[in-house]
Image (cartoon, rainbow, N blue to C red; front, side, top):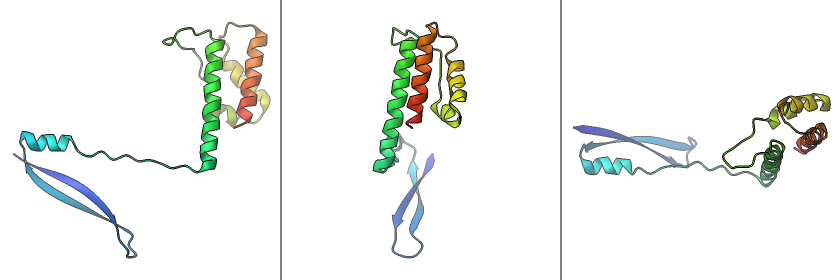
Length: 135
């Protein structure tokens, strides 16, 4: 049995066309050695580079999300690593709201099943809104 393998190569040229892509075909006999060669095919990864300012914004966002996760763990009294809390606050949805009253209502609806004192819940909501404003 004969199999056909297709490979794509790309090279930069100095003409006005820019990148040139070519496709080549190799015919191989279907035996165990060829199968193993195909199985160990080179993997390609895409890596994106961000500018210094963009990385600063990403780090700030991750810090707020990490803080929010820790606060929710404390709010819901999660004690083990396998347990989790029953609340998901999407910061993008929160930031899409224009007024602080709307944001307060949004977070309040999300944490409506918390069994803590109203003062603790109100402090959490106020803190979430203030942290969201830093983004």
